[in-house]
Image (cartoon, rainbow, N blue to C red):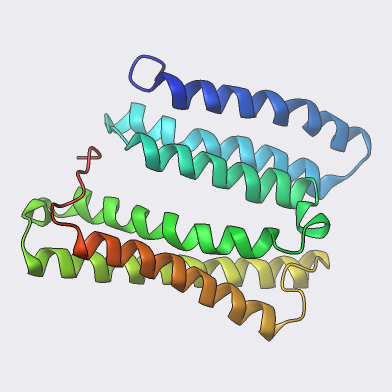
Length: 196
């Protein structure tokens, strides 16, 4: 891990070093939700490195950096440490970013599953853009189901004022996904994928 991606690896270590002490702080305060979110953040941030090792993948550095920062900002800062309550725009910013990140994840998944997509034709770019956009919207829908479940189960307020918040989130997800899909389609040369 360190050898192939030193900057991303050290960013991961640095962020973990901020999460671990706060996990114990929340545990000492018997704040179970925040403690659990800290542990989940550590787990989810570790998964890409584990996948690289287990399946001998090389995840693009820019995507991996954005993903780690997104998980840190949403799960650790946002949920465990209540940045959603401090900054009204925190949730909206992350939904826009998540649309872009999940679209890129969909594109990388398509490259991994279908080697024929490496051809740089108009048709393959259109298919990749549509798949990336659809994948991102599906991920956004799953996230809204998660928020609804958390609200119903633990009494949290992830969905704020209900349908208005949910639709705003989905629209921001769609805008982020659309930006990535358009960039992908109109690029003169196919975005290189080092995942495969």
